[in-house]
Amino acid sequence: MDCLPSDLIDHLVHFLPMADVKTIIKATAGSADLAAWNEVAEDHLRERFVLHLSVYLPCNDDEEDSEDSTDSEYDEGDYYNDAPTDEYAEYEYERYYIPPKRPKLTQDEKKKEEKKLAPFLISVHKGVFDGIRPISHWKFKNSRYAWLESVTFHSYQPNQDEMYQPYELQDILRIISLPIAPRGDTRYHSTLSLDWIRPTAMDSALKMLNVLPKTFTQIIFSNHRDGIDLKVEEFLSDYLDRETSLKHLWFIMEKYDSSAKQVLADRIVAFFNRKKLVEVSIPKGMISDAQGEKIFEHWLNSDGFSQGYKEFRRFSEDWNLCRKPNSLGYLIHPSNRSSLHVSYQDLKIVKFEPWHVPVTMKWMDALIDKWRNGGGLYICKKMRQIELLMENEEWTKLLAKSDHQEWISTLFIKHPLTDDFFRISAVPIDTEAVEDWNLDKLFELR
Image (cartoon, rainbow, N blue to C red; front, side):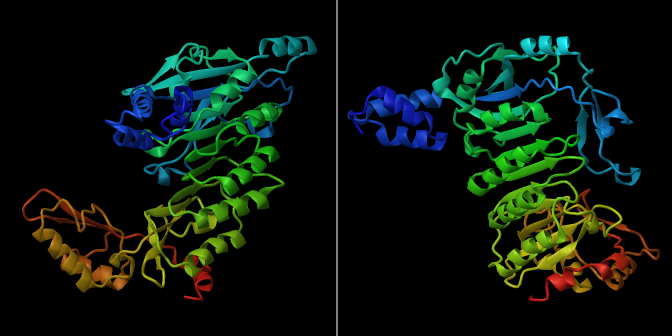
């Protein structure tokens, strides 16, 4: 290794994460034989930077807008909120962008558009200490120090004030073949976004997607007007089968309609089951009941070990058992290593805690006394909040002990030495829906 040429050493170090570069610097410090390695590693540690790319994929289709867009109640080029009713206004919800409709073009106009849109447009931003800065036209300067942190593909017309510049396909392939920055080297997850890719631009998109390294930690797909293209499903299915670093998978879609639904859904369930730390967000109706049971059964038949959490968001409308999106409760793994947390819009596999089982008044008294004798900032184990299960009778006893004769949903207990409060809330549950729920059947093996 001490006789390798400097350009080869530079090429090797270029693909190493920052932690390995620092290790090389420490290991080669003071060694005359490895001075070239030390010099190259220090150079990369000092000069490395990340890029944020936004790739505009031109599409010259003459398709009429779908019924959803033609008669849309939302304004073009505006946002609308996915908040079903005012009841959920205090909770988070998605915001979708409705791009402006393109006018129907004549044959002559289409030819002019084809000439105008021949090159691809890319917006390049360079990551710096205090954020990101646009680059007017990146000419691959210092590309040996460049890593990718985020790549977005889209087909909606860029705004005039956005700094998009024309690039040829070969130049784009050269840029997006750069290594992906690992999670430890960036402040955020390395992200691949597939945002509004029209069918006529799909072939160009796939040429680029197949060149991209499959080491992103987050994928976001949003294309709720046109559904999901079959080629994209095949790409995502292959990605989920082969990747090793993906932690977050998000589908931001109003509807899900595809002939390959079963294939991609099976890949998503398998991906969720084999990961230790993962978050999946999908549109309603994407996962069938049978596929949902695979998640339960895999977790139930596993050793129950959980590092951090696993989360499956917006699982199904059938999970609407609470009047508000609060905690419904926990199902405890037989090993007592993890718990399945169920709420209005998600399910999580989390580390088991003692309060996951239904608690008694005696247990609650001990917890409150411990909090009162402490500083008041944390409830226990440096936790600011916990979610408990209590029988209605136990909740009534707690209210009576706190001098509340009438039933209330939230109880505040003041700390004797500080201005902190112990906040306890009751979650109203739709008991009729619980009776019809099939969790008992799913957990017969427990």
